[in-house]
Length: 133
Image (tube, rainbow, N blue to C red):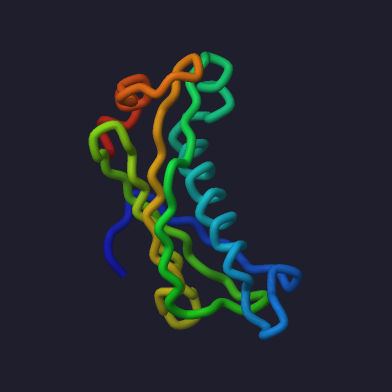
C-alpha cells in the first residue's frame, strides 16, 4: 500500500450488498465522501462552516475504478491524498480490503469552489490545504 495523507477504517453493512452478495457500486461513493468529511473534521475544517461563510466546495467529477468487491461485514481501509489541478482540488482515493490488503476501488474525486454561487480558482480553501499540496 502506498503512503497516504489520511486513512480511516470502516466496515460494510449487509444492507449495502446487492443480489450477488457484494457491496453495490453506488455505496463506494458514500465511503469516499465519508472519508473526505472525516479527514476535513480531523484537520479542523468543515464544509458546513465554509458554507455558512458563503464558500461551497462541491464535487465536479468522479472517476472510479472497481477492482475487487467488498462483501457484507468486511472491514476496509479508505485512504486519500490531495493535489491541486488549476481551479480543481483532486482527492486521490483508494479503498483496500483489510483482511488481505487487496485494492477494491481506486478513484479521483475533483472538487471546485464556489463563492456566492460563482466558480472561483479555489484560493479561499487553498490557504487551508497548502501544507497538504
